[in-house]
Length: 76
Image 1 (cartoon, rainbow, N blue to C red):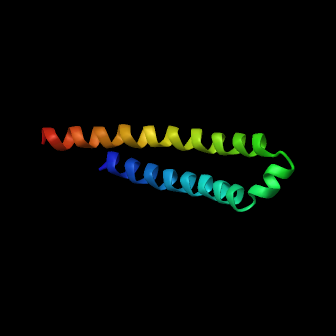
Image 2: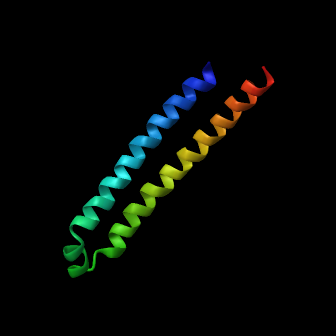
């Protein structure tokens, strides 16, 4: 039960991080002319990469918890 609670909360946090990253990407794509005109590519790339890195850490944690849950399911 504890593993499932942790897994649910980790998945919720992953979705929040994914939404944040998608908002940044949408902002870049919708304003690509302005981004290119002012040469802000590097700045936006860094923001997207930071968001992606934090998301991937949480995805790894979620996958780890999911594998623990699967292990316990298979031994019962």
